[in-house]
Structure formats: C-alpha cells, structure tokens
Length: 84
Image 1: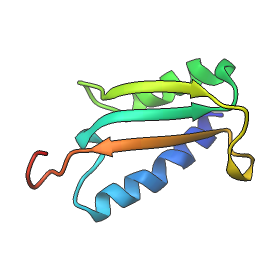
Image 2 (image 1 turned 30 degrees about the vertical axis):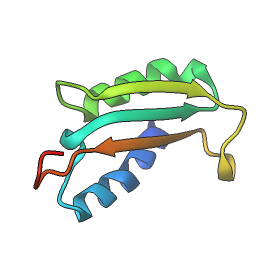
Image 3 (image 1 turned 120 degrees about the vertical axis):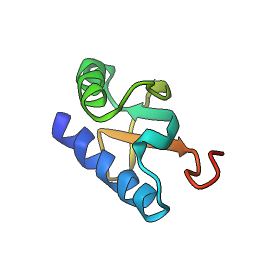
Image 4 (image 1 turned 120 degrees about the horizontal axis):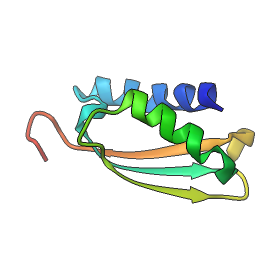
C-alpha cells in the first residue's frame, strides 16, 4: 500500500511543480481509500512527505476507484506567486 500511496503522490506533485508549487503549498487533501484498514499506512507515508503545518485532510472510504486503484488523492494548493 505504501508504494501505491507514493506513486499516487508523484502525479499531483509533478502537476504542482509545473505550476511553480509543491506540496508545501498544499492547504487541503481529500483522500479516497478503498479500504480503511490502510489508514495507518497512509498516515505513515503522509508524515514522511508533508511538512508541518500539515494541510487539512479528510479520508473517505469508497467502494471502488477507476482502474482498480486503492486510493485517490485530491489536493488543493495555494498559488506560491500570490499566496492565495
């Protein structure tokens, strides 16, 4: 599961970097998990990849995701050039 979380984390990070941002600019995460038993693993990986103060976060269990993914992450970031 940790590998899946890290792999999922790389796509949004690349998109953020294209816009001149990174996960330090993240203000909110919405994580969809297909199994809440993976919640502790999610917390461990997030602790390794996010800096304090951590963004607001919600985790929701869903019945399924496209392509049989185990998780999906929706991130809201501020614009580093304006701070908004």
